[in-house]
Length: 402
Image (tube, rainbow, N blue to C red; front, side, top):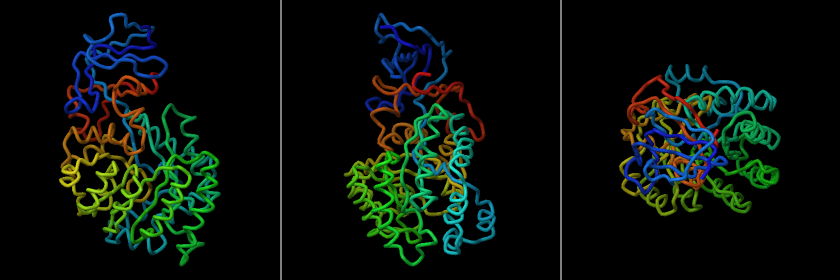
């Protein structure tokens, strides 16, 4: 079998679900043809006739799947450093939001920016993630809050994959906050999201999934249900910002709609976790927001583990609560703050992250038939990827075999 490229003399963390732990393979070999893995495993098990036009000696470096950032707000304008300073001085996130800051301050900046400006600023954040081995990323809208500006955001997100070798999935988050022109009329705004924005954006092919912010400073369960019903009518999967600041019943609603994921989850209860497990809904934990907001309510890791809910990790890159562009730091925060294990952290940014955005058949593990998205590391053991603060040991990043 003649392949395009072959990586030999490597140590693999395949993350394959049928192997224990990280699916470690010594003396590993990966072969790629047309951007797809045709073999990943021990060299002794490779087909005898396997050859390639380009053979890379990895010199015993480690290879993992390319990392996946499954929850970001990468496209936006402006920053909220002033609000960060307010929080340092004791003002709560909820108070800032109710005073017209928070999400709405980013809405004002994003509406004022052109699509080209949004792409340019997002590329700077994206490049930081790619430099750490990210090969797939989810990008949400939600700072436009009108058809014109949500379309602009989603179009900018789509443009990122034309500017860089990376897989980008787009999520419509029209139900992120109540725009100023709808103050006091939340139900009317949800009607606009469901009957105007979503149909137009879906027709334009700009939406891979639909999200909402179900919270006391966001939207109610009833309003979120309307958004999910509209998504289902357009054949779109859903995700949800749920139980970040309080238990509003969002995670249970997400499970009812077979959501890809429920995200944040600091206040989720065990009955909702059981419902998520039954529905196959992944949990996405966001330690960057937990850290930045100086939260004290830990997500219930023990219950998530006990019910077998896949646990993903993501940057939640956004200007207000997680101005973070490092999945390596996310893993360290998850281990330090949430007491997650090394294996859980690495699974969280690969295999579980792929499930959280519905790409597990194409990415997240080193297995035959999946995209050849790799991260090659200058490390002696996988724990170093979680252990170090401020060190990037990436040797090479491979996307679709290139």
